[in-house]
Image (cartoon, rainbow, N blue to C red):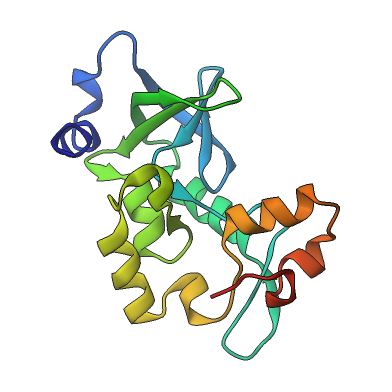
Length: 172
């Protein structure tokens, strides 16, 4: 855990040669690209681009698109520094990434735009998620299906509107 905290606060000038730093292009709420390298943010899961969430009044919105847009706006032209901690099954770098001294995964989870993924994070972002839930920020202000369950439903042939609801067998 200490290594992750250090990596998240490492200034771009101290990034090792085998790590990635530069201006990020946002692919989705938990994936960026820097100089042609796809990077999956460690320990979190953001809604998919076509996933729908419900707001406080029950209206639906594209929460994956909201997360991606917020991340793109936040990173803007800042240098994003990523320290690889693993590779995923698709060969993408899985990394702790920061803009300045702000851990992007923590930033997303704390705003309710993504959730801690304990299967991988071992609870690294649990306190950020608890804060977002308690303040009803982002997705926590309404209802949503965990992104990993949404993907599972889609992979089983479900439609985005059905997989985005509690009828798909999941939901918060």
